[in-house]
Image (cartoon, rainbow, N blue to C red; front, side):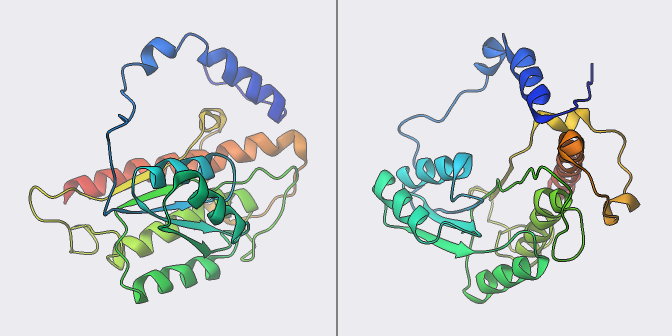
Length: 237
């Protein structure tokens, strides 16, 4: 049953309670083996200067991947840490402010002009402000960072062929070669969101910490909806 939360603590406690006992189901999905390698592959991780994103960057770099860390802050120290912890010098930090779509387009221009090929994109970056804030383009910040920025970034990378694909870039791999992968980091909070008001995403509404999780859940529901539809379109190619 879906449940709404008045504050972040309530949401966290609910998530802990609902996930108790799920370990048996989780074991059905095998984790990566120690022998699995990513040598020769390029991976980009957004929001990788801290937290989960940094841990992912370290893990992928330790498996031999060339890692592009797309972040607003932590440059260069976060990249230095990932190199040191993974033992892999193939780590580069790229500055991007996901609250500003102009910055997202600038990053895409750079990747396109450099002739980059990204084999794996981990769309991890996200924010949960304790009050309503506007992005550079006037959107509510969580809509902008948690949803719009990631979709604009991926749309550009697919259409520019930076992420090889047949649907938009017309440059997908030959038969038998590995295909690119896109991973969205979402949240169980998407289950608490009400039905999406698509036109309403363009409106900014002030809110306080009591309503922060409701708006966060909305942004994650947008992301999940986009991911499902994108998967359908890519599969049709």
